[in-house]
Length: 213
Image (cartoon, rainbow, N blue to C red; front, top):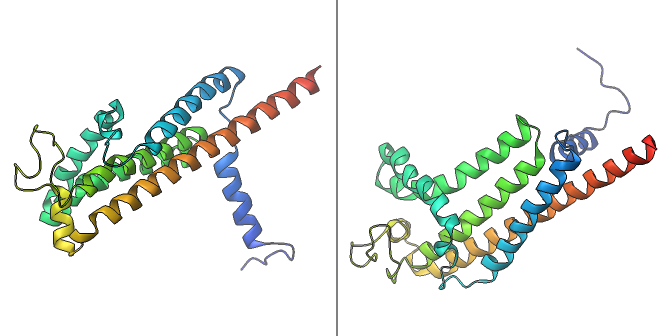
């Protein structure tokens, strides 16, 4: 059995390890810094536009980002189909969150690319915004679905079934607002994370230039 050093501080060690995981980027170059700055500007612009829009406007559902999210949603129904009707209905929405979360973990642990993780975390938040109008429509069933018909015309949709089974149908608007708020908060946090990474990289390159001159 190994003795633990007297100066060993578990909480501090964990915090330091988490800090390195989230902020130490070994993949940065000055050229990549410029490209990442452009990506971040795009994320900030999308965050400003989408997070300010009302749930009823379904602006996120009309953007090309929805076309990226949609295949994962449909795949989720197939993946969760063996687990019963409830999980099959919920599986589409779950997959929209599982996929970007998985990418985030992979970027942090396998690729050691925290900026990539920040981008996929932003995508996770965007998917919550994408789900909010769907949840909000559980009682009204007015949202036009993939087949071009509303939920009322096809006898309901996923979130109408999910909330009915849970007995939460009267809370559809509250849950939708919660999804929208959480998504916007995650998107803002991801932008702040990415900005911090870029500032740290810029400062590092400036120190290296100063040391080399």
